[in-house]
View 1 (cartoon, helix red, strand yellow):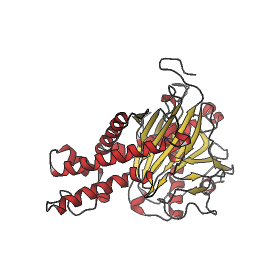
View 2 (tube, helix red, strand yellow; view 1 turned 90 degrees about the horizontal axis):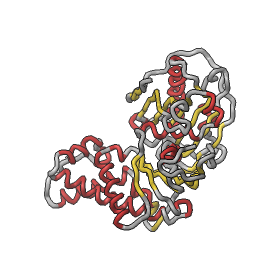
View 3 (cartoon, one colour; view 1 turned 120 degrees about the vertical axis):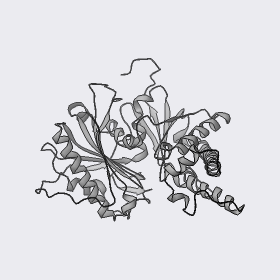
View 4 (cartoon, one colour; view 1 turned 180 degrees about the vertical axis):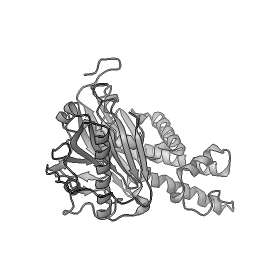
Length: 377
């Protein structure tokens, strides 16, 4: 079935009129940390030094700040800035990558300088993380998030991998197999209650980031692979909310509309949709599904005791196949990392870094190791 993907523009059209529905009533809380085949050892790791949180040095914003520094040095020498007056945080990925494509030129020199510095900073972050208890013994790190999707980001990851090798860090760096827009949705197939995976065709998932929101219908495809390695996204909608600058209430309302559209799509394609929604968002999630901290890039106060996102959405959703909907929430890096679970069976300990608006992180311990070529269970 072909994937249907749409991107919302700056002014999403109003939701068409619908008849009133009975809201879902099943409780909503934090997704599990101990799964059948893997344990989530930790996530949202926050390591500080005298200059603040070290993870802040390996975000997409950090790379743009480094590029600004290189551009300033260029101007201080009396040379023309090839990127003009626009701040680096306002430059598109395409414009930065174009400078690399047109190399050699001043612009490519500046971008390569920022790449090298960023790679050093990322390597230092990895070194510090691997000293922490939850990252001890990590053998492989999957790198996801929006930054590696660009040419500049990919080069920075490759340079960081080379630096890890030179410094004899016992860890491999790998890229996310799925599209970044899909990874943060597909991971939910491993977190959803087993009876949904066994008896239904697909689930609903949200991936809420500091810049974009993604909503999708994720098929399990157990007939193709029992380990869920063939799970895919058959419908996805992406909204760049950072451009619209909605209020917290406005963002929640739009999330509900996107989910309703996903339900309509599944119904039109006769997909047996599980009465389940998985929400991935940044930050540390409490057991009851509220956000303790780390969602500062989202509009409004998402850590307020009175704000419970899963409940707000559950109350807005219709019954799915005449059943109340269960809503779970988990950290976005955890979910994106779990999209790689079927491909990480050959190591005991592994981790994920998501380089986007901020630096997300999670680490995992497999229940058993399946050597390459061995039959998976």
